[in-house]
Length: 332
Image (cartoon, rainbow, N blue to C red; front, side, top):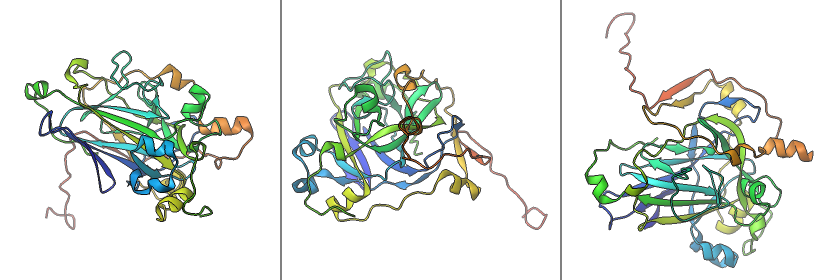
């Protein structure tokens, strides 16, 4: 079962185990420069609002109503990262336009191990983009379908689905009971009533390069309960569509990476202990980023990306001592 709680998708499988629950949020973030450099993790700027698609079904096309799920607003060229939280182990499939964000392969309902097409919770606290190399992703960036930017269009030549697709598989109860697991890792112009075609919705395109490991599944396929799973289609709409559909104002546009860095605010680096990272996808590695596609087409989709420094990087996932300090030069 999936419920929506305060902009968080809550997956639960009580028939498998009373503890089989996980939550997924979509975090607003900086769009990092697409300048060839590999950046550390940018901050979360708060969760995107999420609404039940069924609450607005009367104003939506039949194709959207059939797939159900939820709707989320994003500005053109805005970036997001996906936050996972769970004490119970899960395998999570993530796709954009029904193309796997980890392998670049078309969506299938089951789990694949070779190559691994899912993330493992709680080891994987978040996913910021498409896995292009070992330890490197290209950031999730929202672009309008039909203009050739999205991963879906670059891999299939069609703008059919857009959005994000999620599917969660809990660990079988017998395997959960026989293992010890550590605790949680939380890391406008349109009028209401207008129908929207799939070509007017948003998909995700590859943006700048970022350091991030996608961890290898050291449990093996047999531990995941593939007879019990839940999936959710996340339709992404632009700010004007969001207002027309829901009557709510969308979030304001986030600051640029340069504006953020100019204030000396922190970036992040995550340490996964002994967990091993999987290799990136050759299919995804060969795709053009938003800036590369725009340059190729002579379009000004994005403002010019400038390299920035990220000197203040905070390490996450490590045990770090707390400095005791002093008061007026003396121990307090």
